[in-house]
Image (cartoon, rainbow, N blue to C red):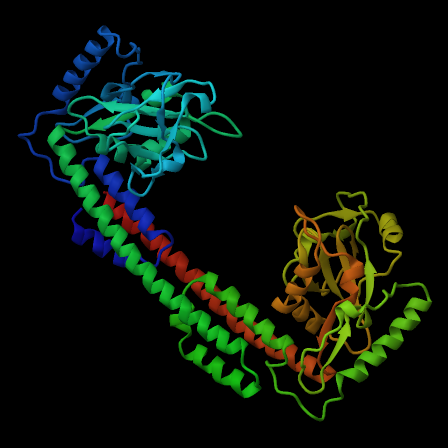
Length: 558
């Protein structure tokens, strides 16, 4: 692969997820298979340098500098792939040795995973110098300039570096590293690139043991197979890999800069839409987005900010124009309060005591009103009830079934008919009601549109709209960024954040006139249909790019 090949591949695959990472893997894959640079028949074969490495190892063992290790013989039927002429398969222990270990008795430079610059494969400048008295009493591994260190424990696997400089005082690492001092003729940088290659990553994944912190032990690590090129070819491979990786870094940085600019333009366009004060300004801002939509929104992840902006416009009264002939929302609120008073008097709901803490003085569009949520809906609260579940019967919906704007029938759970009658004494959900989750997750809402009867339990509230409150508008309101922020401000809990019904009741919400609620719902339906279609198109486009990238990478590998 030449730089020109890589540029062409990057331009082709740039729209695919993780394009640069795939190409980095491809470069390493080609490198360790002998397909990155041409072979030179005049190079000394790898078998000869491995024989010298074996002799060097025997001398180190004889002098007591390292311990003898017996390795199983290479199983030719287990070799990961074929290698070119002049190459040879070996084990890591054939290519490098460790420097031993012991408990430090003098000051030392402690190299840990945080000191590794993973992008460069080197040790950064911030290496702690530690006095033995300040260090926990445990053995450490010795390292030196030219060593390759490999973290053998997740989540730090693939934290690999070459110690490319001297340290004063002498450096050491923890026993969670494997240490490789290459024998003569074995390039430390070549070993580094091989350890990062998909071939060796697959080997480690197959050999690691443990649950909480999976790791590969030193014995299995040392037995890992290495495709060894001639020494001269190792140098050519290292030079080409570093050239191509540097090129990829520059290409990725340029692409990221373009993406940052695009996101800034997207956010600016959405901000203009959110801050529009009149329906006419909204139309103008929306038109600008529509004219540039294919440039501003290029990934499925771009769609959620657009969806949230539309919801925010709806609850600010900016999505549809106001009609002065509409009956003011204050009349609707009064009728709802009258119904609420009758329901409370019959003992079928609670009414919380109003609080000045919840008062609002934000300006609303003409005809709109602020009202506590409890004045608009009857709370039918099923939180805390956990019925016995059965294999069939009446469907049970829990917080897990209530999604952002829809009801999912997965997971499927049921209760008996008898338990259904006992459980639902607080009231039965009706079509047009709204289901709301108060915890785990908090703030999901969906309109009741199921043809079958169902039971509710576990962290759910059923909102039965009063007077002419539109359930579909209520879902839009509850899912809007404005209301979600109100929830977050009043939520409690650390691991499972939730909202207490007593606080939820009192949140004042913006109420449009009855007719405007219907216009908002219709407009949201149209706009969300367009947004959903755009999201599907982008997702399909991303899948096509992904499949094309996989095919292109496979073609480049072969």
